[in-house]
Length: 127
Image 1 (cartoon, rainbow, N blue to C red):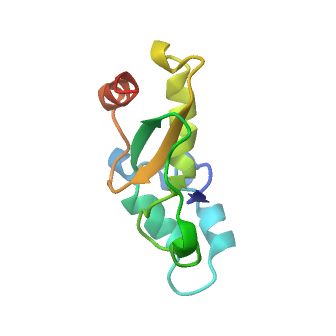
Image 2: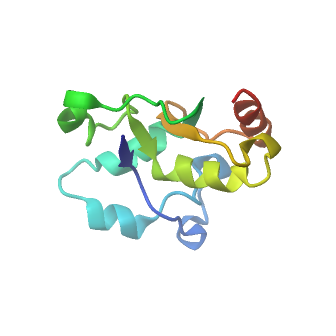
Image 3: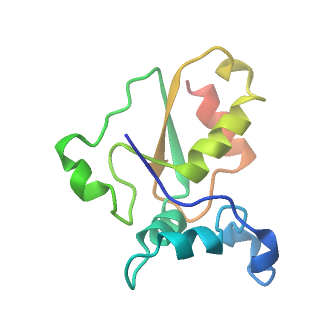
């Protein structure tokens, strides 16, 4: 799959931004570094693809021949995993009993906010 999206956030530079903006995931330095045009697809992807899906085993579909088109797409595509989503999934899996010693795939999904603790529990319970 394709690992897309931003880096670590900096809460100090977003002191006036509301909590639902997820400043822990949005780092201005990363987006400035990655900007290649007027539109920054990394920032667009991170703002619209905060959802996560989990699949039991190493069976998640990749982008295939569409990879050349989806690698810089601002929306979640088949085979995409966001850096923010995978990092949070790894941390959350440490406290989930059924995630221990288990293989699972993580994919990005459309969503303006990341999963809540209850939603993470439901995702891991479904594995």
